[in-house]
Length: 391
Length: 120
Image (cartoon, helix red, strand yellow):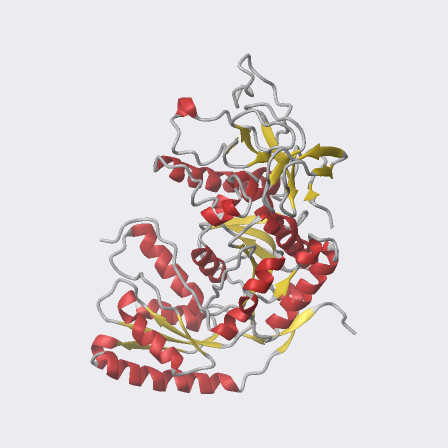
């Protein structure tokens, strides 16, 4: 009898496994976002939309990141079927997104607002298609999957002094354990590695991985300096500073605890780029919470664990986001938005290992279908990282 | 419940787990120190005197450099600690000498009492 840990997931045509079974309604461009939201809302519980602000007026790298992120969501294992809502004149190509879904074994349809004849007709037609796609997914059942098929996104937001003392170290123990068992984890927020990069670089399995990490951090630091501004004020944020974090170095040293103490650093990848290696990957995302989670889920993460000291409600349209805090006051104040509390680690009523065990069990339960606070409340925040002006 | 927490034995600051009033005596890393001012929960207290320009150590690593002399028992925060990273607000000449990543407080010093240049 196999007593390795695991979860019940949806096996996809491309071999990957999902923790959710969404009908993804994707607007190619900001102009079709409202129709996408209304169509998804009419196809609940499986319908979910990706309203975003991009898709046109962009050049070069930004256009590529927009395309790649949307395509990554269309091919994601948590998605069972895709409906692309186009306007008709935008830069993002609806067919490319539909092909991304089909390449990963999912049915995909396209609908364009200009061809259908406006908002009302497009919403009606889209609703019919989305409901039909959802009906097609309803029969699919979850099957037992080994924990090594899990790619966990590691996130911290609204950090305070408890993040580096309790919630991030507890998550770090989980990361080490997951990677020991053959699973994977992704860490983002490059600005919040600045000051602690020596610790991660030392665990890189290849020299070029370590140098890529340093390169990415040097670029981000250079961007702050080029603006002629002190990065402090956004990193750390005013709330971080009130909560006791003095410098970005201090914040980063606390933040990188999420990556564990021994999990080997296997890769450094770009924003929303596919995560291909087992073990720990660093993804080039900003520290901004929603952009960061959007990117890491785009890379293939099926579950997000999000530590928070001060409390933040944000979720993701296709991945469950587990919210965990080490701050007892926040646990009371923002109880509705939290799934787990580990303040016992600080007041020494619980060991770090016991807290990590609870978190590990919660991750497997959520992967198998248990709803997180973000899902219960309908928090589905989505934002694609952008660096350049629109034209 | 402990009133302060030091993470690494190399740390020269500890984190207050509850608000500390002036005169409160706390222990961390085998050091006993008295708070010389009020320190909010979650904020840091100096476990020993830290010279201006010396590294402030938490988690066993430098989290910044003291921008003024910090007496033992003082509140350690943005008013007396300078970050070395992402400082686009400073010209090169004014940039605080950056503590090498992972370098503890005993870095080599030049005549001005600041750590020596990075690449020498």
